[in-house]
Image 1 (spheres, rainbow, N blue to C red):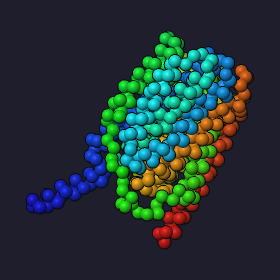
Image 2 (image 1 turned 30 degrees about the vertical axis):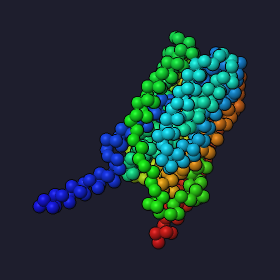
Image 3 (image 1 turned 135 degrees about the horizontal axis):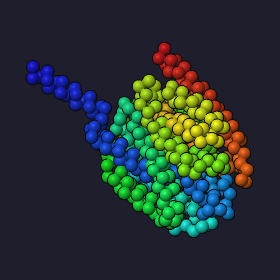
Image 4 (image 1 turned 60 degrees about the vertical axis):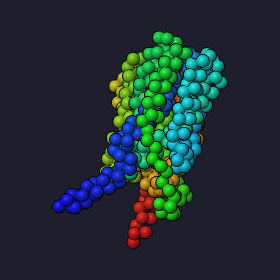
Length: 420
């Protein structure tokens, strides 16, 4: 009897180790730590609509909306483009170094932004676009991969929870900036938000437990083929979707202002978009782990494309609120499922950081031109041609969905041919 009990206890311990390699407590504390890290950094990207509106109307009034968009474009380029660097550092076992270095660079640049002067475009783009972008770039993929490795069987959910933090942070940062800057001025408002980030980043880095890298010898060879057609098509689909999908996110506050929507209502509608994005990042991820990541990603992508055309009805308060919630939710879903989809097509624990980093880097390049191109489409005068941007977004998101269908079908045929 005692031997049977001992065997059952051993089986339970082995099962727990498979589900949580470092233990359940450390796993969830790591998720919380990575959550706080992205909450306080990616938030500056997701709240850029506030900066865009403030820069265009007051702080950088001599610069066009298209020129100002290069700030967020550069920041996104570095956030995603440096994913290859951050991912490789994770694979080599230097996740903690990447997280600490990225945190320091981000905070220093955030405080430098508070020292920028009015109509000094170069100061803003150097501090916010370049400096903060580099910091986020070193943090983004390591935070995702570090959390995911603690959950071998529920990686989509782990990454979805971590990614939801950026959206929640964007909502909090938007509220803070919209209240602090008008009341205390740009320097004090930015510094107050930077101090908030300082506290969260300190706690986040302290909570993270970094698992040792998976030895190459323990992984089956031939799994990390970056030229695998479904993998490349998924990256192409992500780039096409990002090219069009960022337009509503970065211009929605300007859109609301140009349609004379009540300032307070417009602000809270945009905050609702940010918070719904957060829910979109982890709710579909939960179902993706249960019913299939690739299929869930595809379904969310097509609903996302359809919701883009609802922006035509967003000129009224009610339409604006509905659009913000739906578009935000499904943008969050596809962006959080994307890293999981690429690892489904090319699974490898030893090179997970590289796989995710390489898949995300081209999207960063696309992000650099997406917002300025959107500004050119609608025009830089007060008479914005919003219909061009809406059609542009809907068409590209639909094209991204078609490409992803092709990728999934090729992968299914490849798997069936191997099995048979």
